[in-house]
Amino acid sequence: MPLQIIRADITKLEVDAIVNAANESLLGGGGVDGAIHRAAGPGLLEECRLLGGCKTGDAKITKGYDLPAKFVIHAVGPVWHGGDSGEVSLLASCYRKSLALAVENGLESIAFPLISSGAYGFPKDQALLVAQSVIRKFLIVSDMLVYIVVFDKKAFVLSESVFSSVKAYIDDNYVDVHELTYGRNLEYSNEDSQMIDLNWSRTVCRAGRASRKLKDVVDELDETFSESLLRLIDQKEMTDVDTYKKANVDRKLFSKIRNDKFYKPKKSTVIAFAIALELSLDETKDLLLKAGYGLSKCSKFDVIIEYFIVEGVYDIMEINSALFEFEETLLGI
Image (cartoon, rainbow, N blue to C red; front, side, top):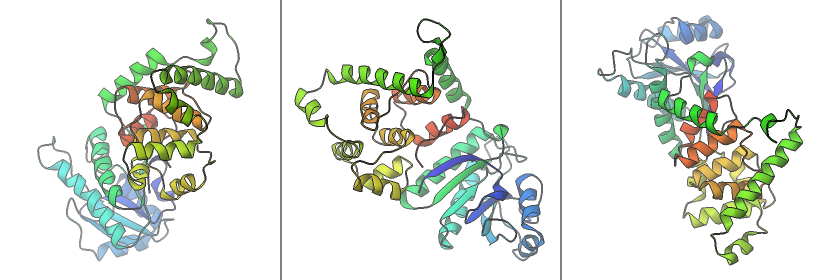
């Protein structure tokens, strides 16, 4: 199952478990902790009184009571003291212990806040990196739908270096659709924009094919997206499991693609597989074309994807963090 970053109220999510950024007493507090206790009702507090507290870096589970979630996993994150007091390892432990409890209780979905990133002062960009690192390792060996939930824009901060680099690339490469045709103020429909994307992509793909063997190009002309994807997986000597997990794609969706050679995927799904397979920019455009899509300078989403491929960065969680920061569609499902 994939990882998703969403902007939502964690107390309203219908998942098997939500994670509470709790304090050591487990008796409620401010921020997310207080909101969860209020939404769950008095039963949650009564059960928490029986748990005898919880150490920093550890987690304990209770029922969800009046929450849509079936369970609440209470994880006690560290207070930030500058980073030299074991804060990173303690925060990572919170995520590992929470995920272990989810597995022990047979849960299939879990939603985390960014633990310790509020009143406890853990820098938000570093808190995100810790969360993603632990969750990534977990999902390699486990099937679970995992959410990182942020309440508002201020609760999510991409690292300054990545944000600045991506923004600069957008500024240099993004072209507003109205600026095409030498600055004339023309209106384009969605259909027009898609046609521009495809025409631009075909031109680049043809140029990219010029350096390839003619026989290979001819053999691949009639491939569907599914056939092309499966061929690339074989060429990269990857397994199906490795591929769909790296692509942040659900196993059931991958099965549909494998079993239906005419399957029509979403554009974001195609790009997710391109990232998982670490395709070059030309190879990515070629795969997109098999599904009827292209990359365009008129799309910020496309420009961001191009930036990461050009930079040789194929970490789908880092890419999704940037897409989320710029309020674009995330990769995978």
